[in-house]
Image (cartoon, rainbow over all chains, first blue to last red; front, side):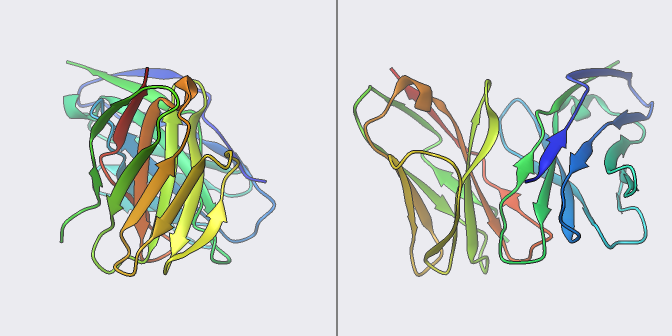
Length: 116
Length: 111
């Protein structure tokens, strides 16, 4: 079974500063993928970044980077130069990628508030 | 390329009724997954369809069902609605295993 743990229910950051959102996972699978999504108050889940378990380099997408530490089973999201529009819920998720199972397992989420 | 669309966006039903939600995936995507999001349980996987076949199923009662059509559009049905079925229902489509794009969701309220 797969499990995602996000230990920070809420985080505050000043505009233009960097912030790290924590995510740890538990799985017995060797081949898996890790995702981060942003959910504004409107409800839509916006895909941010993906990291495969065999990827040697940390994923980056613009201001988003994923700090992947496989031995520690952590996949923290780093947002650089925070903007007011970054205020939202952030979800970490994982999926077994060795077969045809596209099911995502989500964490409970972290509510990020960016202060001006 | 158009994103995932879901209709309706909002729905109000009463206990005992049934409801059908619709999802149109991104063009070319053959996998469609459904999730339920509630404040108490968070995001939970309902089921996934691929080429008109249910490929995976979450731990939900049989009142929750779905189907996928030949054009990859998917519908989800909930029969005999209960108050606890009030939730945001999210649909997602995929072409590869390293992606899953979500629609805006259908917010269902059961009175």
